[in-house]
Image (cartoon, rainbow over all chains, first blue to last red):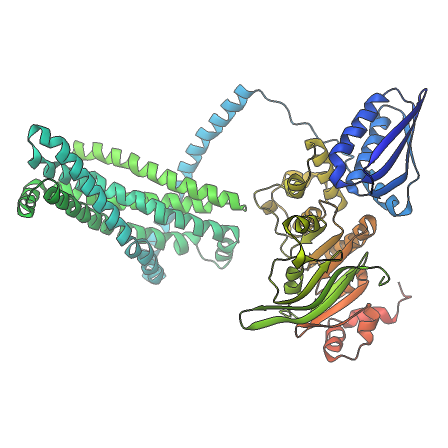
Length: 377
Length: 262
């Protein structure tokens, strides 16, 4: 089959165009250039004949290009006739005569400064909007919680235990491992720096305060947000995509009570436990490094630990844990409900869930730091 | 119709999962320019056969020839060339959820053809209009479209590269009778306009009657019969009799008995 081509014979304001060869998808890019050039070169033509008799193969692409050529001449006020159309191609040409008749509105051009300002503005509004959504879900969650207090049988105990196993029990190994390593690293760095001015012993005080007040709970929350928060968002999001949440609603069930409440309760119970375990693992790791790297006997380490741990230090970390768990749970579930139909939005919302909950956990930690300083703990 | 050469020719195809054999030496031909309706009970393996032809499922035995060449014997490049000549409409549409209707139709063009953005827009819009959608749907995402619209956009995507063969997996399932009849009409029109060969898996007796030139029946892993609908209705085979003669089959027969009354 020969390649598609278009030959032109001009006589004054009359042009005879003859198309031949294959006018098909594979050659469409080249054919488009050919028809554009032809219509430009014969811009002054008043009468045009387009002969299709020698076309060997015509598909939608080729037919549309011929239709476009004809329309280009028509908009200039010159009549273009199509001749030599075979019976098999006639239906296709007639079909294409009907399409693309509506002029699509051109998108208004905006300048880049306005576009940037626009997206910044929308971004800020979105932050406000997503905060409102979290607060809304918090309200709905409290209502659902009150409802289950009034009717304790409505509390989904099995579901809570199931989620507790997933976000608590199964997270224990990785939480222990990472906090153990953080404790060891802190101890090594502390010993290395403190040794230069002979204050090795105070490493234990530093580690105690850091681990019990801040690092233990933060590391656990970051791990939980990445591990369980993302899972919550993905689960609720895909349920939203498949209309399972609508199905729950039509059965007279409250999605917040059925889906969110057990998940958040499980997180609020699991995170303090994980924080405790994580802190212990960090202190253990620190002790091991003090012994093996710093040459501090375990008995001395334990002695120092006993002196350095002041009950409020431990309490501060543990008090923060459930609030941070609540934040992670609320953000994760809110983002899950925000998923719309597309696969991309599921990914987007899962990312947003993890990023937002980690950020909020850190911000909340700052607020707590000021609060505890205020009340002298 | 059967004077034309077959575009698809399946011989002794065996496909199974684990210990179960779904297709047991099934053979079928699709001739150029015909609409073949492919029927069988639920779970009989209609979709499995379609998927085995287009290469989504591995076969254990047998040959699949498309346009006269054995698919198993082709290298990657030759296979690509064949794949560009068929389009597939999946049962649920299988539109890409993160692309708009227009982008979905443009997707195969973007992959295989080097076209200017203007031409790509025009062709994709033309295809959307040819399947009976207005230009307003172009910016909509699949989640914003109704079931019938999704099927139409999916059909437009299947037709994006102007294929020679179209595989339709239950094109009218989930559509109301009016929508289904319109879709049948659309398939018939497109088949005539574009000169397609159509392989249609269906359960819809009305579709079989309205648009199919020939019907093939799958039962117990084999194609037990093929021919025009009249032959199917006249058949003595027990499965065929219960399929076409059952409660749902009767209207088709009745209409067939009084062809002049309109």
